Length: 386
Ligand SMILES: Cc1cc2nc3c(=O)[nH]c(=O)nc-3n(C[C@H](O)[C@H](O)[C@H](O)COP(=O)(O)OP(=O)(O)OC[C@H]3O[C@@H](n4cnc5c(N)ncnc54)[C@H](O)[C@@H]3O)c2cc1C
Image 1 (cartoon, rainbow, N blue to C red):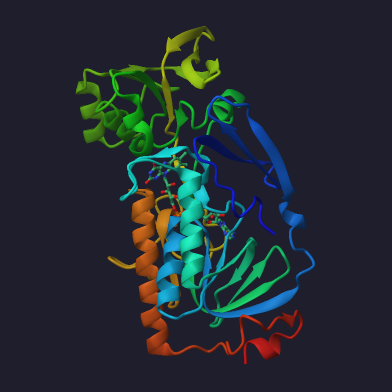
Image 2 (spheres, rainbow, N blue to C red):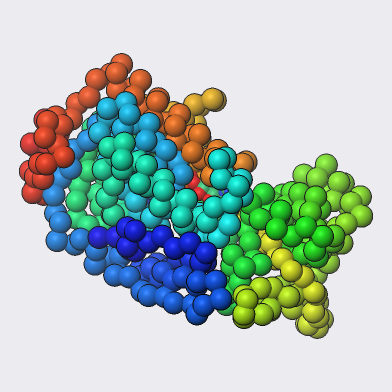
């Protein structure tokens, strides 16, 4: 049922998880100095198709990034017996990166390794972890109902939404090739690796300007590549950018290719096209930061929950409560500002604690007696929501 083996834990190796056409997951690893090895997993839509059952729980957690797993740890310790549905990317965004140097307690940890540990932690505390994808959510009444791609229906008194966000990419083949090896979408996460080096930032909005400014803390030079000659960012940020001697804007240019070495995999430069003349030029760079925005994974709730800032789910101040009582949102799904593993984990903690308080106050409607062991066939809805 899982896209990759539970004990997939390789030290001194670089691990990749790539999706093709949204239906197959490709997992691979490259032992340091060794050959890249990869394999395709089952088609997601084939996974567990036969399992048409209904699962009842006090708390359903959707998403298996830092927010989801932390919610699992706290909810389990609050005796809520949570069910956590992992989604198409078990472990979340950190499984797509290599070194993580800002997770407290670990000077350096591989992203996939950290997420395997988080999963094991949530499981050890009592979270039931299920390899499924939620395709449909009914939040019109409590208990809430979620339909899984496997055919399973989940019925829950409270819900933690932790479906994360996704950086927008240009879609170039060479960008994909060097992702995690010189191409990044997160300056806060990866800027530190480019001390004293020349880098390029792609984009012209707030994200690009902020990332370029932040990267001057590390890089010797930052070239900001933008298709137009006007930035769509706050004026104060543009002023700072223009005054920064380390930043050189390159107007009317777009990225056409990232190039570099294969062994070891690393970026050496980019090719850019002048959008007016079509002329192609080379820029030497060790790092490429694609800063054209992020998209929260809000597909399940965008029409029913209040959202803002391009689709991020709105929560009450200092809280993970959404506009629907009993539905809590945590992590990058709600956070247009920080988008970090540790802030997501913090919000996961808050969501579980708030869900516990909510359930203590309103009580639970779902008869969860034996819920872990009882699988009702589909079509017996009356028995479920009694
Ligand atoms: C390349 C890269 C490098 C990064 N490096 C760092 C770093 O060094 N340090 C740092 O702090 N942060 C880093 N980040 C950011 C960090 O990964 C995110 O802030 C964090 O993962 C967000 O956690 P989350 O739990 O909110 O969601 P995510 O990690 O985005 O996880 C979302 C989860 O939701 C699941 N999901 C989505 N839709 C559904 C559905 N319909 N049904 C069920 N499940 C669903 C997905 O399968 C996934 O498990 C990096 C991000 C990237 C992309």
